[in-house]
Image 1 (tube, rainbow, N blue to C red):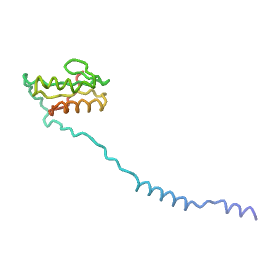
Image 2 (cartoon, helix red, strand yellow; image 1 turned 30 degrees about the vertical axis):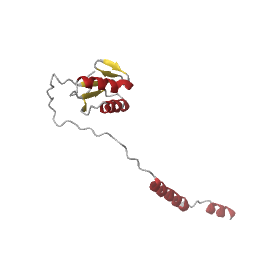
Image 3 (cartoon, one colour; image 1 turned 60 degrees about the vertical axis):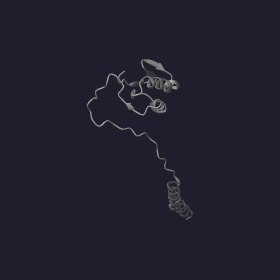
Image 4 (cartoon, one colour; image 1 turned 135 degrees about the vertical axis):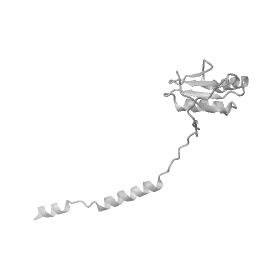
Length: 133
């Protein structure tokens, strides 16, 4: 007789536990903060035809290799000197646009730094192109 009583009391009632789990779920959903990620607006070219380049209007090309090596005017440039180099080349040719050519494996931090450096140097005609080694 005693054995039957022990078997009946061994069953666990899961209803209170489920209530607590649902209350915790609602609490975490309500208190969660939703982060809005910030991005850059990039205008893509409308036509696929290559533009004819005026030989008098040379571009300032900033190449970024897969190991974040920055090359401006066929010279390796330290990341801290990007702005100064762009300012110098822009002073020589004020109409020249800046073209950034990042390698597919280059870090976004380096690409954005080069973009910001060009804007800080006073060049607002900045575009991106495919990396060609």
